[in-house]
Image 1 (cartoon, rainbow, N blue to C red):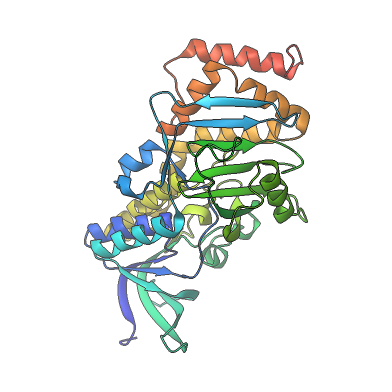
Image 2 (cartoon, rainbow, N blue to C red):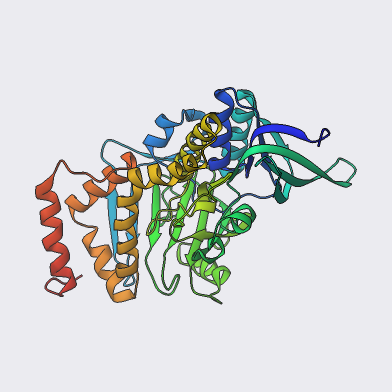
Length: 400
């Protein structure tokens, strides 16, 4: 035991959730080990709202594009533009953004290492020994160990930490996501592409139960699709989408795929030493698939819970991570989940959903909720108008 390194907390996973948790813990003087597997870039549209930029102190030089509108494309190929009046959506490249977050954790005092989590074992004094594998410059693998009071599992939707410690973590439903990063065409070089606009395709031919996307990233663009349907050809759908928008000949920079959780786990802690964050906890917004903001918020709540646990030695403190997250964002997740289950069910409903997006009230409330991460209550008349318009669409009173 004397040869095993000692830490207050070990964070497994160096994405937005894990890096945020490690940074917050290190800034409070805790000795933290941040383990990042390395060698992989998560497939991600890369959109971040203004609230994230402000709340987590993200410098603007990391933004590779500023999006000022979105375009929804229906199954019948009808197109609805949704301008962002007085705001923007920032776009980041995960191969730059994530390392920057880890560097910030390191600057705050965290020990950041490239290593693969192997397992953990509790000791007689209620601590945990985390085992991880590292590969040296010569390609030789070695097993290392770290002893800690608390573990934060932020190692993705198929989290090994979660599966070893939290009941039913392996049963979380997921969407399979795949995207191709391609070189963007020059401005004006493609009539169906705008480097300041995100396109969202609600067409069953591209995704039977989710959506496909075209998200500009400055000189590169993410073209992707997601679905929970097993056996569906994601690569084929992306190929078809590229042909539809005239980017089939654009140079492909890289291709990436990963599972994305559909809903938060019912429990994020093991009641003893472990708490989850990010995709490991299932905090990806339904309907939109947005994950970066919620991952970082979840990482912050996990760090706060661990700090309380370290000061009190009471494992009940770890439950606060989920409680605080759901108190802040649970209602939004519930509303988005209902939207996804109903409106994404088939092309007839998708057609009506895109039609609803033409409404100025819908556009205003959608962007306000997205940019500020709250349901807007200040305009009850707008909510009432939307309610009756939704009913009209549901009963077919209006045509899509």
